[in-house]
Image (cartoon, rainbow, N blue to C red):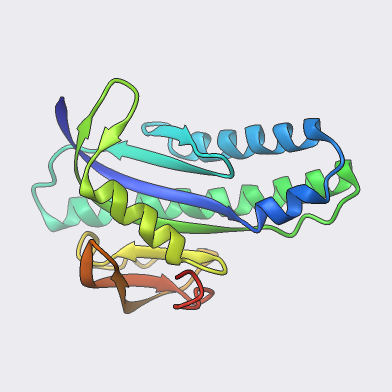
Amino acid sequence: MAREHVVVLFVDIRSCTQWMTGVASVDVLEDFLRAFYTVVQDQFPTGACKPLGDGAMVVVPYATLPHTSALEVLFQDILSAMALVERRFVALCREVEIAAGHTTRLQLGWGVTRGIVHALPQDYLGMVINEASRLCHLARPSGVIIDREDFPTLPLLAGLPFLLTPAEVQIRGVRALMPVWISQDVVLGSGE
């Protein structure tokens, strides 16, 4: 098992299961999810994208970071890619709404961490995987939660579809209290 330094992102389509019950065509659902996975993979070309039903896990490897400025550049690249996924996802929802004739007002929830994982042939193991998954779960009804210990300095980026502010969350079984960056659309307590 190889150890790798990675950024882990979990992204989930919020209210997708409920939306799917109103879509008459299985082909529309399959095409929608396939297009969603493509949108995610296209924005993280150096990462491994693992489809997870109505979500995905993205694992982006990086070289060991020797100084703070490299970490800031990495964080900026991750946020920029997330913003592009958000924009392309909105456009995808509009396309599906027109094609299927069914209201498609879906949003995304994100959880982001970084650290060391054990790389398996088709998967990854490590605490950062669990943390990213649980942060994504807490990012409800939609929005972004990022481990602030992993990314302590927030880069100044224009055009992000989310505003990040500092907060703290509890992740049962992982950490008592975790400092995070959280977007304005997250309502803490709604994902527990």
